[in-house]
Image 1 (cartoon, rainbow, N blue to C red):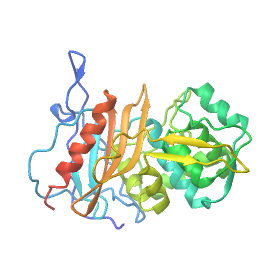
Image 2: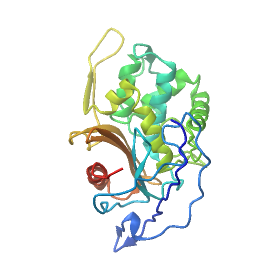
Image 3: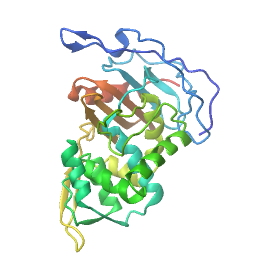
Image 4: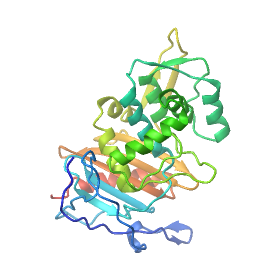
Length: 309
């Protein structure tokens, strides 16, 4: 998508604690954020995102540290709070992993699960798809294992296979982020687990860029929109059933995208939904209450569908 020249005015928000409860993101003003460089011509949501001109009503209350809602077709920002704030994003990282795997692999290609993959998830304290060493699963099923239960074992197996090697894959993740204009993003692994010295970081705006691009891939959109998936037993692997951690699914028009949580990142959510014939993509970062992120996303989608542009 080509860069647009219209200036973007984004409000900044900060997390405040009042009697142990987080204040809305727009209740206080955060320190000014450093603007990102302009996105490249490949970016789905350009660095200079056009702001919506009018709204139907005041936006819903948004909690957490950063948030954005954009029109996937035009890139217009319908809501923004601290969109350039660099933060750890936990398992939202896996969206880039899935996106990049599909640039290298075919859905039917087989990926072998090795003991190091299952050990990585178990010893790292990550969520797991309970993959079993020795099984060989198609890439398509591995994507379900990655995105639905947020399997760190699946992320490690995919990165190891298509890096080549995990280190090579992470380098490609960062190169791809730059190509997409995600200039405030740095990945340290393929799953978002904390790492010694750095957890990596991204921003709400950069994750919206990625979300728009990811949902343009029909298979990735299908996977992210699925509430439950069963991979039946075959000659190469045992049977698996995975449930999606995204509680927004099931709401009218919801089409994904990814949940995340670590202590450093808080609860995060990349989400998308169709409203009035348009696809809206949003990101919430740094929420302190798990269930509230889904309510907030639903409210933002409903409100964003009424914004006049």
